[in-house]
Image (tube, rainbow, N blue to C red):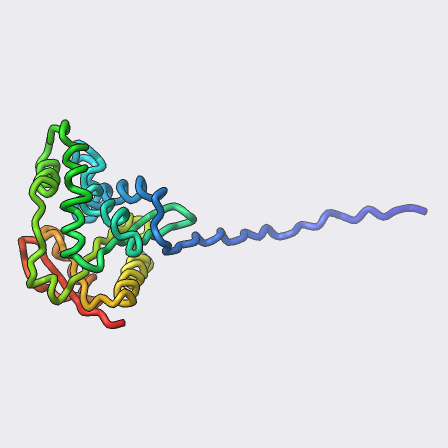
Length: 219
């Protein structure tokens, strides 16, 4: 019995769509600390990379990010893309109490850690002054807006509403904690970002010279 050889069939090439990246928000872990410090540095120059401005790359994060992760873990969240940390939002529900804790549990150890560090830039000096003589938030702010937050997202995820989702997540967590109001500070050289926060109900309340914006919260 003879067999028939069929001619080859030309099948069309099908390009399968690339898998979409998975973006998620989760609680920050201790293993995220290095990434959070790096993100703080890479966004510390009015949202841009500030690596060239600091003699010690950990400096900005040691003041404006890491103490929240350590002392207020319930309000430390990270934004991930395919498991990689790309942003964070940290907060404290009680600014006055947080400043008291920093005075006892954070600044003294940090002063000791940086005792041998010689500042080489204006930004280095600014951080060391903050650590050596930290300012207290005015009561006129904390009475109505006792909580405060910091949020930073790397440029790759600054589009698509990811930063907005992260901010909403934090605001919801603070409201569920019973906080009546929250404030944040903006570098006056980056005043344009105030429009972003205004969309979430933040209103300018004070200049110190930082632009202080606040909004009320409801459970």
